[in-house]
Image 1 (cartoon, rainbow, N blue to C red):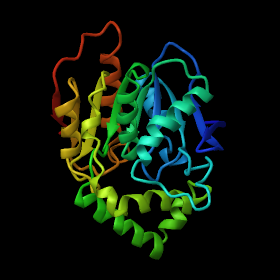
Image 2: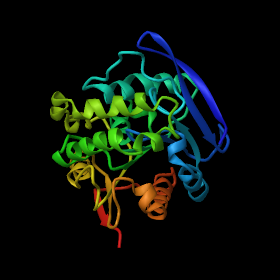
Image 3: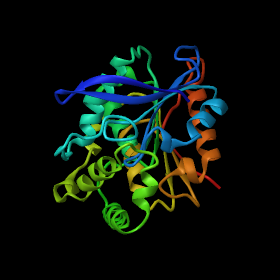
Image 4: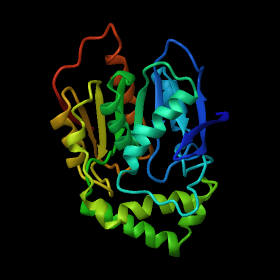
Length: 277
């Protein structure tokens, strides 16, 4: 993938956004935009977006949010507040799409925090989204999530975790600090977006591993309870990153969802939950 940069005006300063296209920028194939996890970046997806696009017959767009990868790091003294994912969904994502001249309705493929951001964007901008594929999204804060993020904080200070993450971020302390601080910030325990999903009108596929160390199945089941037509995939022998633990199942489910949602395909009706065997 060839790295490009777009510049947006965000919070009163110029912020560059690292991004890569998979396949042609324009074409008849559906476009999938990949939204990374809380510690992710363009590079941290590795070859998964290329594999998914090749096997599903879609085009792709991968980018690093501000503070991550090779995008502009957080400003000195900048701290993220409880609404940090809302700001990404309502401010950064529309500005980025405008900056690159995106004038089509993409699928959003979001992992973890990226899945939450995808939900918030689709609810606020229902006419600008073709569909959602969500891997281990967060709708509310669970004890297991906070406990393991605290363990990550300890590992960052005492193990080689910082060095390993530094391979994927120009400013690794910006990336880790922004994410870790807000998730462990006591007021964030009340963060909840369950009531903000009513605007979603597109097809939704929500995927979660049965061994997810950062969340329970209550997260994706909450989506199905609020968004008609949601399909759930619950995968055994799979942790918080289904695209790394069980990539073939994720690719197959995504390809099937995109194919089933083409204009000449039968309409998806009712919520569906199925477990991988």
